[in-house]
Length: 181
Image 1 (tube, rainbow, N blue to C red):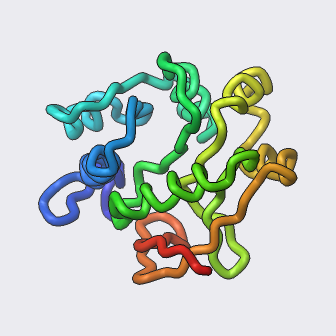
Image 2 (image 1 turned 180 degrees about the vertical axis):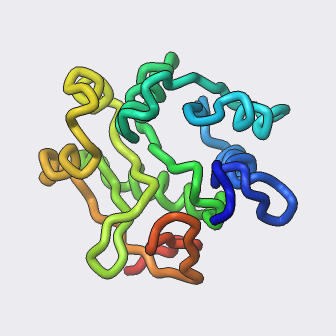
């Protein structure tokens, strides 16, 4: 992509990571934690002035689950649900995040909501805070796919339709999330 850090690439004049953080703030989610790793100082600067907390993941080179662990460990206030987002999805809107939160709230006993399209799992996911300790205890060896597979009986697949599929790093991103009845 011609850049060392895709999170700092500009979209409509702002870095990808800032755009994602603003959309999460627009969704009025509580206690937003940004986990920083590669070029943490530069990414932190891109987030200046936003009402989010940043934590450093010194083990970011060891894989994405180390960042999930750092974020989960940083949560301090009791919460019902946790949304695990990727910072490289700049085309999601606040309404997309809210659709996932609403799906999670509707499920009751279902404790994990995973967006899917054409049989492919997407992000972000929402999970019950009851899973926090399990994930932290199992270490970085438990990936998200394994975690979801282990908890299939409490996982809801939230079908989405793509309004405009775009990507910076993956073949599949959903720009708009719409509930399919």
